[in-house]
Every structure is written in C-alpha cells, then in structure tokens.
Image 1 (cartoon, rainbow, N blue to C red):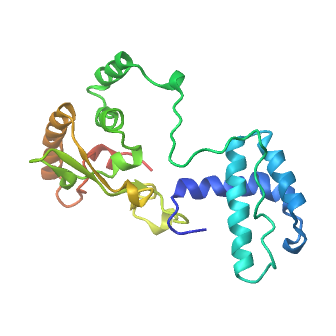
Image 2: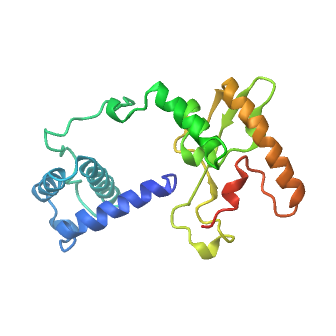
Length: 231
C-alpha cells in the first residue's frame, strides 16, 4: 500500500480485503487466479455495494500489477476487467450532489445560529462557509491566517498515520497527528468571508488566554478544545 494514502483510505481497503476478497479468493494460490474468478468477485460484491466493488477492483488491479512487476506473475489477470455495466463510471473530478441531502440557505443560517456558544461553532463555519474537511479544520493554526489580505492557507490535516500505534505517540495524540492534505491539490489559499474572519478574531482571544494559562503544554492550534478531548 502506498505510504501517501490516508488512514481512512487504508482502513477502507483493509475492510474490503478482509470482508470480501479473502472470503472469496483467500484459499486460492495467486498463480491459479484467472479473469473468471476475478470477474465473479466483482459481480458478487457489486450486487451488494457499488462503492465497495470499485474499491475491490482498485485493490485487485493494483496488487496484481505489483506482483506482475515483481515477476511473481507472468501477467496481471485483473487487467482489462471492468465492473458490471450497471455500475456507471464516474467522470474524473465530477462531484455528484444529492440535493435531498443538501441544506437549504435557511437551514444553513439556522445551523450557524444554533451552533453559537458551542464547541463546534468554528468547525461549522469553516465547513459550511469555506468547504473545509473536518480533519483540515482541526489542523488549522493561527499562523495560517493572513490578517492583512484575509486569506487562509490550508496545508495540513490532523489524523492517524497508517500503521501508527498508540504506544508510539504521546498521550491522546494517536488521531491528532499532523499529516499532509489528502492530495497535493489540497494545499490551497482561500479567501475568508467577513463573518468567519470576525469569528476567528473572537476565537483568538480564547486562544491567547489559554496560551498564557499553560505556556509549557500549549500547542499552536486554532481550535484549542480538541487538545482537551480524550483519544
């Protein structure tokens, strides 16, 4: 598995291998795999979950290509095998939005209003008004804010590094490790809406108060409360 994938992706692939690939192909020798077995695997998984079938195809194709490049296999039997026709191929970089699950403007305004005076208010603002992922929000630092031009630089996220263990990390830090953005394109600079900018200035007051209260243990992160939470 490539080191640059996120822990969430690693966990998703691991689950697909354990729950679908191993039960169907786990007792076979790699040399006996052929397109018939692989196609049957795809069809079986696709009948239940289309998204899982896509992951299974990626895993099989990549793994067997690796085996081929290492001269373990003479060919890659997964090459050229497509998913069942009922699964539509998603166009590159096309985002499908389910309007039934999308908040209306009045609902967004209500969400922002109701989140005031709660620990998740800043997360709501960054997510709803600026489109940041939760892991990116948790990784923000005040040094990422350009107070003159009112822009925010997103260049990291917090999460769990693949294969990392609790004993290898500081207490309560397993899922709060600094990692790169999901893709290189994830590093970006965004204009900060006026409402969010004012909220950042208010949150900064709490940040400075906490920093003065515990200078030795304090970490330079915008959302201080996530460091107070348990693992």
